[in-house]
Image (cartoon, rainbow, N blue to C red; front, side, top):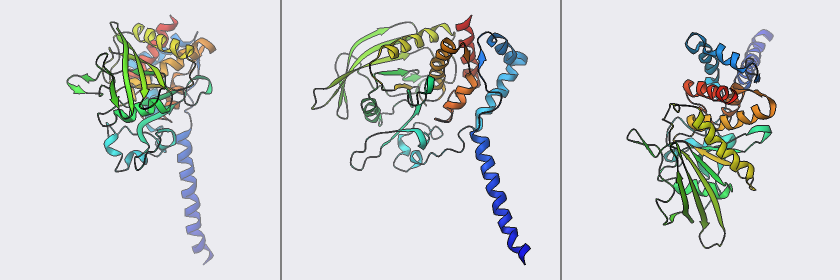
Length: 316
């Protein structure tokens, strides 16, 4: 009789252990992810590139289950589903950006806080490109988070498909989104990017803020730029603006889904800081960390390889 009683107890204990082990496996950082010294990085890159990038593939596949234990409940609520550009790119509940609640309106926006270099927990916001129905929410996020810069790494239309709604004015005439008025005071176009100066003013208030808009225009969806030099230079302009800023607000980075090009650009900024300050770089480790904050960051293997190529070219 005692044996019969103990059987279900043992089953429950075993199930609990299996669940605990599963969570540990999902959360832990794989052993091969470690910082590589800048002196050894060229050899490291060469090793990963052998046999048609075989080791790159092996390393990249490790990220497929990262974040599988994190919930996305708010994104799946009926009132929030229409605010998502893609059904499979949804923010985790644990680190999603929350808007201030207004009446019955949800605090939801498809965006996550992403950590920066040196333990900064909320240096970036990775967001999807605004839909026509979420542009007002996007600008409200910019205002409430006191963000002084927006980095856009997509075009509004690519290959005939809408990738992002245009949320800034076409010319000198301001546009209005919710209770915010946005005016463009300057626009400087280069071969691969455009830099805009914007003024955001809250209706019925005298307060206005300047927001710099960094728009990289030469990056194909799901692909990589033709070379690394332009993106490294573009990142330098952003970093210069961050370092000279008096604001502690996060830098908002978005593409269309807010994971592939967005994740690659954020990783590049963080990893080049690590190179300069530590003379070492942990690319796999940081991608793993980002994916604990937003799914699919650095969305394709080609983007992961390109990130390594950027570091290699920066060093050589």
